[in-house]
Amino acid sequence: MPRCPMTHPDPAMAPKASQPVVIEARNVRKSFGHTEVLKGIDLKVHRGEVVVIIGPSGGGKSTFLRTLNHLDAPSAGEIWINGAPFGFALRNGRAEAVSDAALSMQRRQIGMVFQQFNLFGHMTALDNIRCGPVQVLRRRADLALADARRLLALVGLADRESAYPAQLSGGQQQRVAIARALAMEPAAMLFDEPTSALDPEMVGEVLNVMLDLAAKGMTMVIVTHEIQFARKAADRILFMEDGMIVEEGHPARMVDSPKHERTRRFLRLVGEAA
Image (tube, rainbow, N blue to C red):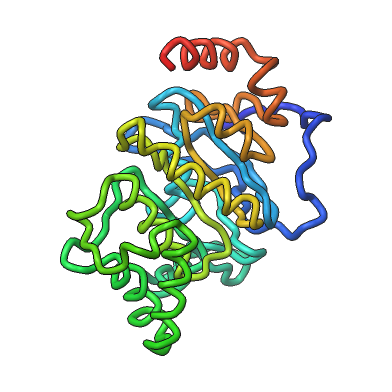
């Protein structure tokens, strides 16, 4: 099957091309049964770059994000992280899947924040954050504790370290989830519609944390319908539909004057629903 066409680079874009590539997808395809959800996606994300993916529901955005850390293994194509194969190894010039244990080790490089918070209900906010570094990274307990407190402060929850998830609002739980992912010291963060499960008044507090991470130089790939956030935070916006990247470009151009009619139609619908 021929590769899907890519749009020409937007001359207004200023990707951080002088920085190393952290995430690379090469002709990534994904099928579920006879349904092809991803149809040959290529993407490079440089260190410190924020790439936001927008598009209609069912267009493949979340599936693509899950292939980047092999929660859904690609049916074809390759993922590379920091210049090394991810989810596979090259042996005698052929790609072979790695073991589950090796994949778990590789996944430490990529933090992921989901729509649902997935916190451990029997643990405090502080323990949710420090348990991974202690149990997985074998970090000293005192160092993990200090870092967990630093991260709680980073997401504006220094005063809630003893609270259990049920005692936190949805926005607070999502901020703890972000801090928990950061505690593993990932090379990049993936966000899958992190505000979609939140009440409107809680959306801003989570987006502000993500804006702060962007300002600090965290490499991020974000799936969201928050268009104004995308315009403010992103280095690039990608519009995905029907398993393909239809258009990509500088945030201001993509929001104000997209070239493709499918992108314009989507943004009109999002604006009418806001």
